[in-house]
Structures are given as structure tokens and as C-alpha cells.
Amino acid sequence: MEGAAFSNGIDLLESETLTYPMAVIYFVIVVIIGNFFLINLFVGIIITTYNREKELVGKDFMLTDLQKKWLKNRKVIVAAEPRFYMKLPYEDWRQPFYFTAENWLF
View 1: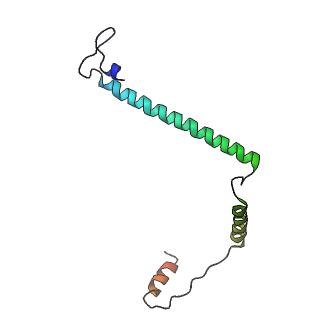
View 2: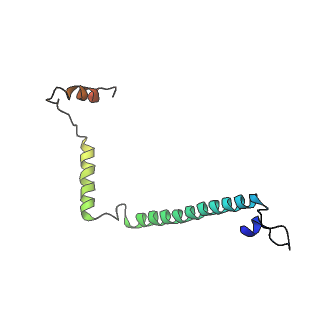
View 3: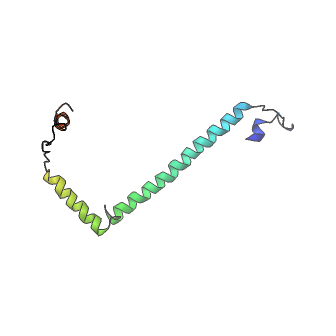
């Protein structure tokens, strides 16, 4: 990059001042775009490999037995659709906040 930015032409010595300032911008842009391409390539390979392993072994192959049990229980709880009701606070100063939070506009 330095050689391109400070060059004077073919078979000429480099100058002390910056001859082609656009060359610096060009090389910076090329390096940034190249890095994005390489990162995208590596991330794509990692995601593809993970999805392939997930299909071969099973959906929850990285979970322990305890985590699988918790997940199964959690799905049962969500399927039951429990309803939670809040009690009206006993303190008078907390009741306006309760009514504000329970309002359908909130």
C-alpha cells in the first residue's frame, strides 16, 4: 500500500510526499471488504456444520439430561396456559401504581 501511494510511475523512485492519496483509500476499502467476505465465509461454514450435526444427532443434542427434563416440563407448563392474577396491594400508596399497571392502556 505504501509503495502504491508514494510511487511516481514505472521505474521511478518513490517520492517523499503522498503522490496518490486515493490509493490509500482504495487499499483500506479492499481490506475491509475482504475481511467481511472472509468472516462471512467462516461463519457460514460454522453454521452449516452445526445444522448438519443437529440433523444427524437430534434437535437437542447439546443438552444434558437435566436440561432435557426441564425443557419438557417447561413445554407442559406453556401448553397449560396458566393465568397469574396479582393481588391488590395493602398499602395505599402502592394501589395507584397497581391500577396504572393493570390498566389496558398501559
